[in-house]
Image 1 (tube, rainbow, N blue to C red):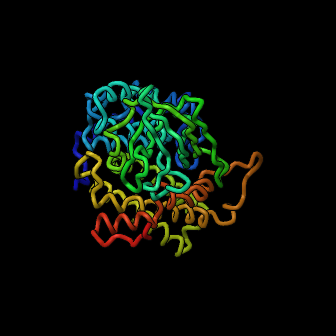
Image 2: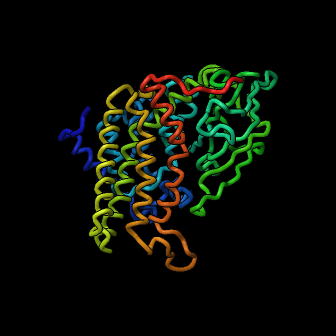
Image 3: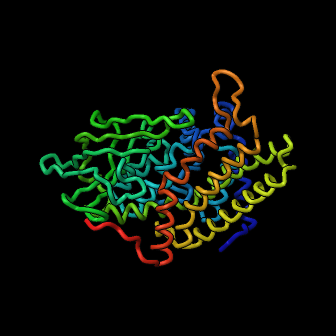
Length: 397
């Protein structure tokens, strides 16, 4: 595991920092530190313009192969880019799902035609993606999806019917990758396919889900005889589970270091408040601040260990603990923020009574241990896949 960086890498760090300072200003200044979890509804059009600005500087898809439009940066330099992006207050990426999930999956499993047709839009910051995995009865249990897709031999299109839920930024997306059941009568992991679906169709309904924070970055998505070309399947019919699992490996990739820098920004704000309002003098709060700092260091070192292996979407054993660790840590950070603020945490300054950044952190982080796979499911994954323990007993069907 490599923890340090070379002199050349540190020179690259300065290049990233300089570019961010020169470009995240003027019309993009209001975007600094905005658009993260719990704030993803903010400035959508401006953040899309920022994606195009990043593309102009060749700062999108920096780890992708040059053959796919990326820079082909080393892991060390990718880590540096994401760290410096977050340190500078770079806004939440509207293109994250495309760049971090859809793109690498298409590059690894898609056809050459799919790569030529779909990857350039992600690189240029002009095509935005969302993820069609969870359903009302298949949240953490992805193998229970009921959305169906049937190939219409006459038109050469897949016809999709079903519902997805908790779909981040579906209302801002051009494409959705959808796990659907394409084999009639199939159950569990079998008979699933990975389909790429254009969102600009009257047969797709997107309904916002309002959360505790009053925001609606999540959505329900309904497919009613929705169509996508037969060529918009990644892999073969029935390979959807394999591809979906590889995508989860990409999800635990280099961008996790950028996520941690965002966590560091939040922790820094909490520490500054604790020093200014006297909360840091409380020995219990001081201990919890130290534990939060230590947990973030552990998170970083495990991420570097994760990244030291293959980069083909394979979910290493070290990666299986990541979601459980960060979500629990972040939920605890939200509670710590409220305790450091004290009575102030319960107050809003004035109309229109918008939540402060730390109040939003607290409310939104309540969901961290649920979305993306609940903590209970994550513990099963660790036990069964990483440790090789017997599978959890399941009822007979």
